[in-house]
View 1 (tube, rainbow, N blue to C red):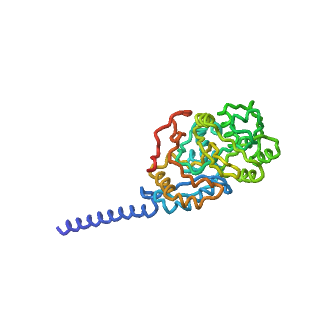
View 2: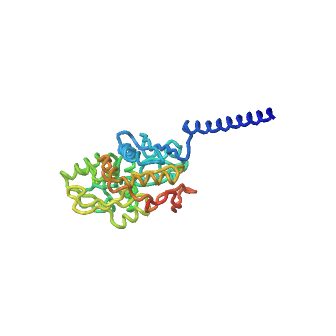
View 3: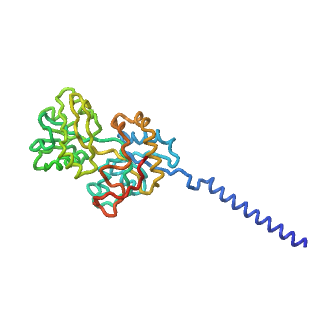
Length: 338
């Protein structure tokens, strides 16, 4: 009997030790940082060059929002800007990025820089600020159609400005045979306009744009305003170009509103991020809009109008299309902020 009791006690001690050992193992896994459902998700935000606006805006987002986020932890990375940022998300090297709204459109359609590239899993989340397509011209040129037969600086070769310039000109029915195009920076264009060598120059930048401010101090300002028909044609062909009216007084000598289109500096997110993580991030942007505005660099001076609605209108690709060049909008992955 004594031997039997001793055996029972021995077995009990063994089971107790095993149980304690199992509990210790579980605790050690948690203490070693094993990810759990409560652990913040690490988000790398791809931006642009360290001297550029995207990198500065990324730094502002981190500074203002870091303490507000419970589901994610943000780090900001300097990159080669829009095209590189799309590729980083596609390759899994970044989870969020700032890039131009037309670039995300090209990525989903497989056009321009993304011809033949794999379809990206970067999803449109929210606009941050507008980059306005502005046309500075000689007096007497009042619409895009008036540029027929004129000499126009369309931006540097291969630049985003050049792409947007031809989109605007093309939507107005003008071809490369209708316009004498010259290439150069916007400052080059402004200088040539002052010297009477060209008739108009395109720029894509946040307004007020420094070069136009300087031009208006010593020259008669004439910014081309889009007609209703021109605006409708542009937006039908390129829905990522949104209407952006420059209010009277934006520049010295500007007595009336000027109708333009704009691309957006846009926040995108990887399809792999959960809806809750993205929702919390965007809600924090809206809830802290004033703090973001105050901390934003002057080169993104139009940010007080934004963040824009979480979902775009008119539609640009929000979800990966099952096939490229699909003109229809898919069901929105990320819910609207309410």
